[in-house]
Amino acid sequence: MIDHIDLRVADLARTRAFFQAALAPLGYALHVKGPALGFGVEADRPDFWVREGGPSVPCPHVAFRCESRNLVEAAYHQALLAGGRDNGGPRLMPHIHAHYYAAFVRDPDGHNIEFACHTDH
Image (cartoon, rainbow, N blue to C red; front, side, top):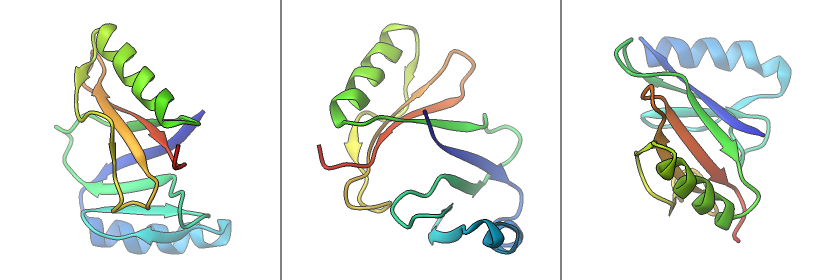
């Protein structure tokens, strides 16, 4: 299951204004502010992210939802065994929300692949 998508944009302020307006009818709001902006219907599960970055940054960033932290770790380790490159091992990321646990790898083409869990187990 896809957990979220992360796009790189040229002008974060312009993009913020655009998506705040365009996504509002769908029930989306801006829930995470900082170097990355996280939009979503639920405050603790933003599923659409934007951040500044040029065309040299591999994109898109794709995250797969995992129902447990053990699955995050298993997927991360299997991705490394299959030729992925570490881009940030399994860890808690409380700046997103209290239970956000994720791991990151680069696939063979350099795309940032994430495995994310939103629970406390």
